[in-house]
Image (cartoon, rainbow, N blue to C red; front, side, top):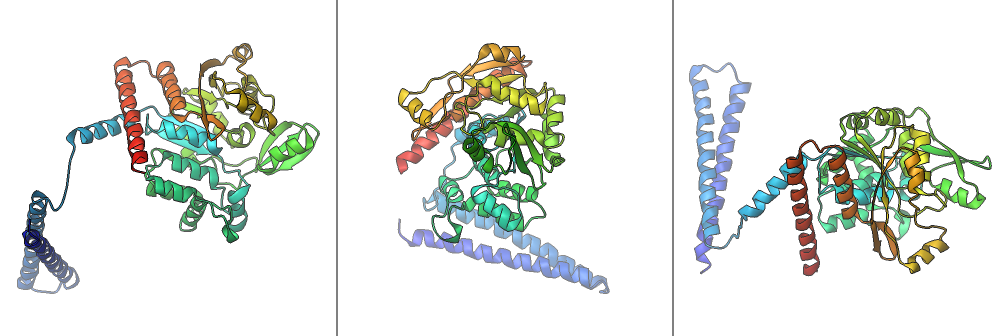
Length: 452
């Protein structure tokens, strides 16, 4: 086609848009005169009402004719628009079903929690992540000290895990400065700090950031109080600060005997309590037992609401022990800590890894005083807690982590089987569609990698 074939409809679009602006001005002028000059006689009022009606008519003509011109450009191939009805229908159906998914509340912090959330968001949009704000190390600690705000690091990771963002945006928010005064500081932390600066409180800042990044579900801080951790070791030493506790345990070669938060009466966020009351399942972990999960249970009313809840109460055990916190711990030892700080009815199911790891990685972790967490079934049974075991290991860059997709699948299967089995047809439909969602996401990731 020649260039003049598309110039004419293009000019028409511009003309009709200008015509639409004229209509808006007529409406604005007529309406303003009617409101501000009420002393006009009947004829003037009729005139300005006529201006409003004319403006509306002009605006209508402008919109319809602009659309006709745009369609003309589309038909001639200069604006390419394609609609795949099957994809749109599938997408709408997925969103519809995700909204009807189980209400899951996850409690914790650190990278373990955010890893699980990445897989879980493909099964339900009814997710509430209750996240600890006791972190005082690294970039989060610097911002707490400089700005007096709550720790943003774990919150940031959970928001990004549940966000619907392009890879470049996620890379940007996870970027850490390598030089200058901002060295080791995360851009995502600074983004949240800026949101905190223009918000009434930290909760509102988290909500605004979640809105900007199109987060599935909700992320809420467990409390708005300036919370800190304090551990008493077996040798009697008292350690203040989340980042200091594991280091001092290793340095003093003395295990954690007791843990508390300061202030001890830190008040739980209202949204966190409401989410616990409405939950179908409450999930604790994965993550650092003493510094990510337990601190949430110590916040006023959190453990109480979990015990009262009729929801499925699930603990996701770590795959590896953590030096300075859980050295030598078995799965039952993790559970005993939760029962100590949360009460007897805090957990009724544990999801634990049954997979193995290569010998070279065993040796590598052994040198760092870490090992696979042993699944001691008899001891767990004696606690009255049911075991759900599966191979949950994923090895990436020489590190052992939970397989996010597999963990989410096992978790949702458990919730469906143990809690929501009353409607088998709905469950089958839901799980079938969940698999379609996962397949679509994998296909999109593959296409993205191929483009690179």
